[in-house]
Length: 86
Image (cartoon, rainbow, N blue to C red; front, side, top):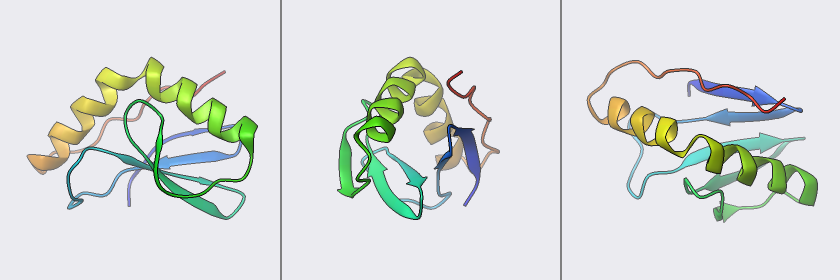
């Protein structure tokens, strides 16, 4: 699964042949969750409130880029790395 961003120990990935609705996967300290492009958890759990807040902030800042990556995935094109939070 391609990594599209890494920040503050959080790894953001997208699968190539993933299902709708559009989403991304985040991993933090061995915990995994699926998020929509507004940064809301769809499935799974990440216990850290700070990590969830950072993921939400990042997703909202990069919603257009996430959407473009989702479209690339559907066309079997390469993902584009997305700027991490700093």
